[in-house]
Length: 131
Image (cartoon, rainbow, N blue to C red):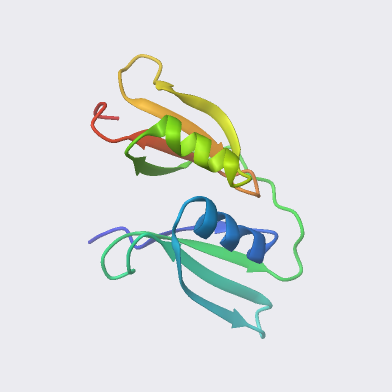
């Protein structure tokens, strides 16, 4: 068994695809419209789906708002330098929620940013801990 993908619902698919590809450097792996169901699925990631987990962006055509809920935590991405990743995110129009630094009660260097819908993405700096 392995993790295939994490699905999140997005309100503006083009804006979300732009964010994940241009801000985070992921690739758009596939995209398909489902007219009978009035939704579109887009899959983004750093590697092909057969090789690693990806993010499924689901756009329901008739929905313009979602409540994020309090059960969802975040998506984690390993980076070489969390501070640099925050700066690049900011330069590319992303929102930094927590600047890079050691996590509370630990030594792992982390940071948090948000995607266009407010989903949290954690940067975990490679080699800084076991978080």
